[in-house]
Every structure is written in C-alpha cells, then in structure tokens.
Image 1 (cartoon, rainbow, N blue to C red):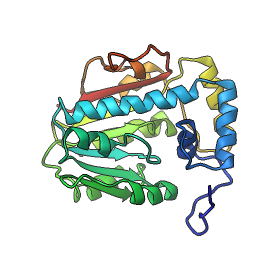
Image 2: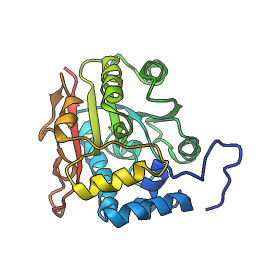
Image 3: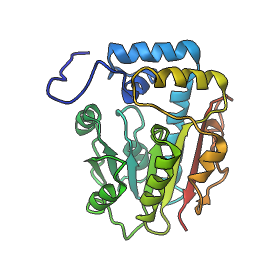
Image 4: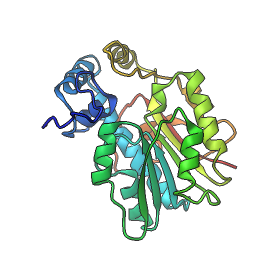
Length: 262
C-alpha cells in the first residue's frame, strides 16, 4: 500500500483497530504494523477472522431488518470503520433507496476513504460526520441538521463500545438514545468474554500499544438495552440473531442485539 499519510494525522507506526479489522476481512487498507498485530492475535485465537466476517453478517441482517420490517429510513452509524462490502447505506438503500445515512467517525484514514467510497443512491443521502463519540451531544446536534429528528432514527454502534469501559460506555449510549425520538431503534454488537483464548488474545492486543478493547459478559451487554424493547431473539451471540436459513453453524464469541425505543 502506498504511504500517502504525510500531514494527515495517520500514524502507521502503531497498530490501528479499524485497519486490523480491515485486514481480517481480507481488505487492503492496512499497513505492516496492522498485519503483524493481526497475525499475532490469530496465533492465539485463530477464529478472529471468522468473528470479523460473521459480525459483518450481523450488520447486514440488522440493517435489512431495520430498513425492511421496521420501516426505518434514517440511520446514524457511529464508529463507521473502513468501508468494505455491504456498508450500512448499501444494505439500507437496497431495501429502501430513499434511506438517509449519516456515518460518524473521527479517524483520518476512515474519513479519507469515506469521502471517496461512501456514495448514496440518487433517491437517498449519505453523509459523513467527523466527530468523536465521547461527545454525544455534539454528534446529535450536527446529525439533527442532516436527519429529521422528528422521525425515528436507527442508531448503529457496531463493534465500537468495546473501546470504552463500562463507566464510559453506558452513559454514552444513554445520551445518544435520549436524543432520538420515540420509535427509534438501536443496534449493537461487540466482543464477549466467553472464550479464554479470545480473552488471552485481546489482552495481548491491548498490551501492544493499540487503543484498548474490552470484552464484556452477556449480562453486561444486556445493560445497553435497559428501558428498550428488544427485538426477538434478544441479546444473543452474533450468528444466532435471525440467521440466514442456509447459514452454517459457527461458534462466535461476540454478542449483539436490536431494540426499539418506546
């Protein structure tokens, strides 16, 4: 990959979660330091690439449900990550071409790729907001100028809340949901602490100098949905959320859920 990162604020000397995830998904938007960290992780927990692909499958199914059965036409996707196959707007606009999507991230590499690749259908819109999830009020204020907060919004937090401790994560989610109207939906997935090899690999990753990522118990996942109406089958391992009929059984140590704000 050509290093055109001078003056962009992109640090290629430290592994980066979005680039490592891109590597596990088979993408090309990563550097040697990311591939090395990703390979070290796989040595301890070889199933991580399957986790990455399966988690992406949940996003596809969740957005399809939200744009279809739930009738959502507005999506606020925070912690976008690097664009790959079946991004939120692509899935939503396949179901409902007039869907409006606002992506939020604060990583310069993600920003550069989003501007180039995240293009909307003619009937809908696709916007990118350069903002930090640590400031939910600022995100909501700006997003309200891009989406109609008089109508329901689907909030997507895919694989991002693991970067925060419980003391940080739950208040962030509560503030974001408080700013959305009744009838909005919330979709989330993240890694769970239900497998020792996964836990060990994550501890090694956190010690590498990369931004830490914290695994949670299933019970702690359920706390994210307090006060919301969970969509069946509730908070479950990622492959168990409305799986495709022909999907092969796979054991994945990530949990997810989709819920409606009353």
